[in-house]
Length: 253
Image 1 (cartoon, rainbow, N blue to C red):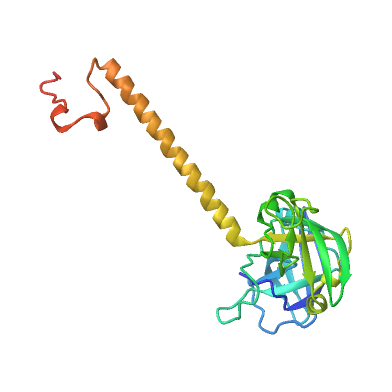
Image 2: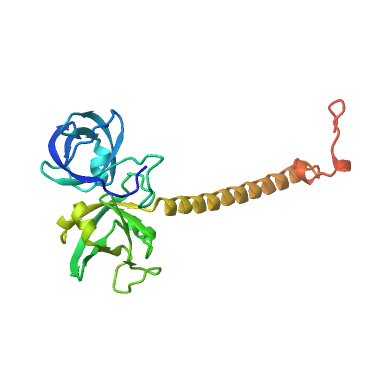
């Protein structure tokens, strides 16, 4: 698990393609001394596993699935945001981030403001329902606050339902790769995990209710059929009272 608070920026030093998969070597600005084999590091918001490392950097493997679901950042020379998995004693400065990218977004506009920048991003359509004004979103691994969002539950009528805006202060721009964004830049997006859990719970509740209703209707139907075919003797035990229970003796009902 991560928090979306970037520790440092690294650079992709080398990439090797293997049957559609990719091995990537990343050089952080300062290599950590205590990196371990198999630990998780979020690279531009993508949770990846360390396979090898040395004093200058570490290597990770990206499957075809990961490459298909993330922004095309995986090229030599590209700068990337890095965050190691949080520890139990660490401060929780951002929000719950899994490192599982939900989709790719596109930066539409970057506007300079006094002391900050505003950016407008268009998300993958299926992520629009998670964009809540003043809610959280992870963009290229950075925990950010959605300022405005479009759509029925949004706060800006001039935005499409799949568009949202961000305010970026100078510190964020200095310690991340966000200062390199421009119109057309593609970015990794991860929606607030809590929203996805709530949505899943509601959908499963409705599905379970539907299953119970269908099962109940089926029992009623079978019970009625049994009463008709049994010439008045119901095969539905739920319709029988204690004194109505049939007794079978010697094969005769």
